[in-house]
Length: 468
Image (tube, rainbow, N blue to C red; front, side, top):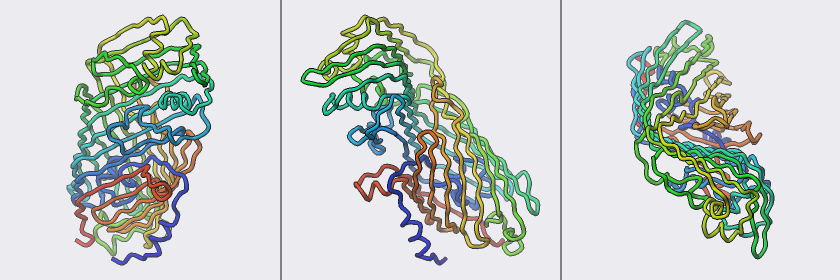
């Protein structure tokens, strides 16, 4: 196989200046992603271009924050709620509706096997962590984290929700060809999952007031209504803002279980100009479509925790004025308790956390017949709402991706529009033989030496025979 260096240079030179993105294992629209494509659409397992596709290990870490940056590769600190955000570098505009979404996904040894031309199965094992934080006042939380250093103060009125989940899943995948005619092709697939919940935490409530700065400085709370739930059954006091929003993520235990799944279908239009089965007798080993349309619903299901503890705390006697030094020394929650009349209600029992369910729609089109150039349009829509209790919510994304694709080598340039913040980003990725690697933030690596996003996969690909 010969690779034109100009083709690679043209893609690499188009590197973004500012970037973030939400991407799964590799790029699921590549026809040679194998078991990685089964994660985003379980129907992709059938006629996947592989007889066997074995994943050794793959890692994907991504996230979006409109105030501050996420320390993606601090395994101890992220993702575990608000503590995953670094406020040393943040946007100047603070709102009461700032948000953060962080998604960590590790695929452990997994396997895909094509039984024959019409049926395929897979075993997919993943360790996942998802955290989101909506409607928080970024400047207030940044000042709390840095002890109110170098701040001018301000007003805040946040009705926030922070949910973080960590779980493992074992998925059995099956896909089959439903229709294979001269010009039309349809395949359907599903993945049944057994879910093992490590831990889930949710903090929500209202914080309203203002704060000033000076030699003393104080924070004035006009309205405080906080609720905290974790699934560990422990009633640890949350004595500082870092622990309040992200405690209980150091020791993971399988203390919850549940069932879930993914479903999907793929349709291909195969006109004569691309349907080359007369030349290559094995249609499952080569691309024969002009247009491909796919749709899937991902992360159906929930995890039930038998032991949980919920701490509803209502702080009365507002407004409450607290010196900043008291908050710095004792933590936000403890400082409020010392200055307020506190009523608490402790509840313990079962609680169910739903997975971050989403809809994934894709359209793939070959630009030049027999020239290996494609363009893909992908849409991710969250099927859970930000205000829903005990679940995460994905961000809505539209991604346009030109790519150059062959059996052994592919290069991609995704350009993503994020509907929640109306931001546009771009990235680059490469698949070469058994290695898939990419970053949605190469510009950050070049400009300041920091990696903001990375995915990596190491696998053993055993292709279908082109000629029987």
